[in-house]
Length: 185
Length: 158
Image (cartoon, rainbow over all chains, first blue to last red; front, side, top):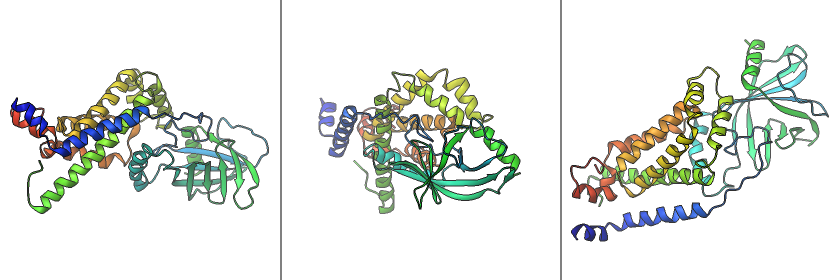
């Protein structure tokens, strides 16, 4: 009797929190998961965006035809973009991104991270130049300095003129990094 | 009810309670999302782990952890993570078995970290769950206060 009376007179704040739990649970249980087919996107991730600690090597070359490279060629004329992990504070900011995304799917439209840019001209490999890449999920694009990559069709585009200048491909990461390291010891 | 203390201590208590609530909502959202995404009813977690394997340095401990433990036991792990997140979320939100809820959160976070999902965003989470374990915040605000008075020797409501 006494226990039930205690429960009845429980602090209103606690009761409010219980109501909040029930409300949030109901909201989530009725929420529909939008599942568009994004698996063909360049830098696709199951979590919707290229993951925080992931790295990738993209090869972009001036061509009009899609000629997918399965591995990093030893020579040729192309640009390599080594996308690195997000910076420390950018990683911290993912707490807010994940939090707000639970309530508003459109709140986070992309992020920035460091990128290493290497230009290859036949057997000449330039020293890596550090820049910044912006990966956008709406629209699905990647901005690196004056270039843009369309994540849906892999087109490499000049930002100023919007001219198509080639295509970009994601290469196997660890093998590519080994080759890059050999050329830039 | 929140005990009356020195203003500085009181600010700390209020801050910790706000953080506990936010952390719990975050955890609740994560747990419900996993149910909605079919984590416990499909092989989605296995696919997530297999994808992660390709992104990790091949000689890292996380690869060993995923390939020899997490992938073979992905169904069990999906259940443990999902139920663990929901239990922690509700426990922290309403202050019921609060320290145990924080302990379960810590267990999940440690497994995220060693399983190849470590990043700097886990640091604030580790700090918060350590505080939730150290301080009796469920007795400041939550069901633990009432239940601790009723069952003072019980380890669940301390």
